[in-house]
Image (cartoon, rainbow, N blue to C red; front, side, top):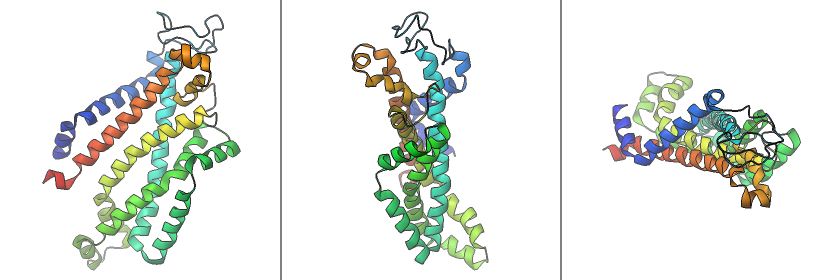
Length: 278
């Protein structure tokens, strides 16, 4: 743990990314404290108001405070990213371990299914599913998680194929440990670094997918705020050209959180790299 922390702290981008993520998470969790207005309260007398002392980031088409919506939208976007990551890890790790450890016909069947799923363009299938089952936070998590787990499966399978050839795995089999015990106590702990790095990338991808689908009107349904559906305002050329406060804060939030998560993922990967620590 000490070696990991020491190596991670040497990566300045990873440290800065961690600080930015912490700030976003704190602001999202304590949104009721930091928000100055209810995110869904409309004020038709203050439509598209530019930033001022009352509304520090201005108001939108319905007079809603953008700063408050940005905070509450962070809750939704980050939650979608984390929840979809957990679903991808659950499915991807389980199937990847099974394919890599047992091999043979089972491995071939699983990997052909993975190849088939990965052949379909994500956005086409995601948009079709969102149009059929409707847009909501739960449906968004399911769509992202169920379509993106094959990437995790391929990574985990590759790690398991290497790990299961090690002498300590052969020794565990000779000592009579059953398959479940070997996987839980020997395989997964030794591929945890790959899983951790993959999980950070999954969070970033989940936030981006939420923003994209919500921007297209197929994600989080209004009036519930999310960074993605706040960017819908940018579809109006007048807003895009003259009302920067209606879309730049949400866009910058997505960019910052995704970059920060990627920086942290790179830092975790480097800190867990055994070859670099030798």
